[in-house]
Length: 142
Image (cartoon, rainbow, N blue to C red; front, side, top):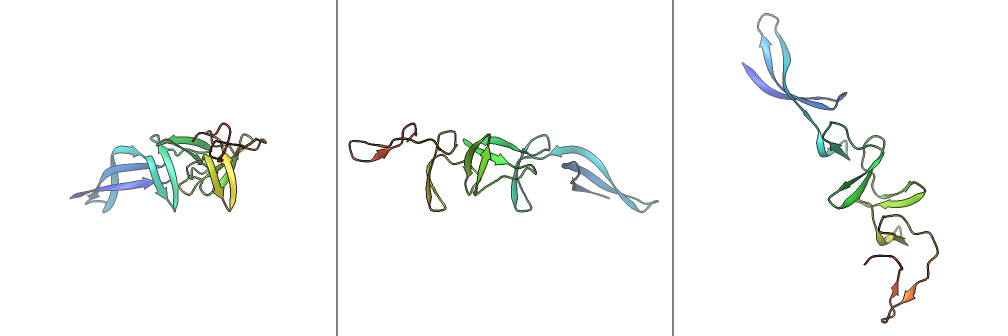
C-alpha cells in the first residue's frame, strides 16, 4: 500500500513529491522522490510575504517589478512595507501593500512628493498656480 505525500525541505527550500512505502521486513517508511518542485511567485511565510523567482530562492536585498509596481525585499527575502527605505542616497516609501509610492503622498500627517521613480523630492522647487489657482509641481506626472 502506498500513499502520495509532499514534504518541505527547509534547508534547500525544495518541495518533494513522492510515495511512502512500508517495507514489511524493516517496518520503516521512506520517501521515494518523483519530482522536485521549486517555489515560485508570491508565498506567505510566518506572516511575511516573499517572492520566489522559480529557482527556489526568494528575491533578497533587491527591488522587484511585479504587476506595474516596484517592491523591495530585505536580506531574508521579506517584502518591506509601511516604511521609508534609503537606497543609493535616495528615500523611497513602501506602502501598506509593499509597493513603492509615487506622486503626492501624506505619510504620518506630513505631505511629501515622490517623483515618478519613487524617490522623495528634496531639492527646492517653485510652485506655480495654474489658471484655476491650483498649484502644480514641476516634473510630476498627473
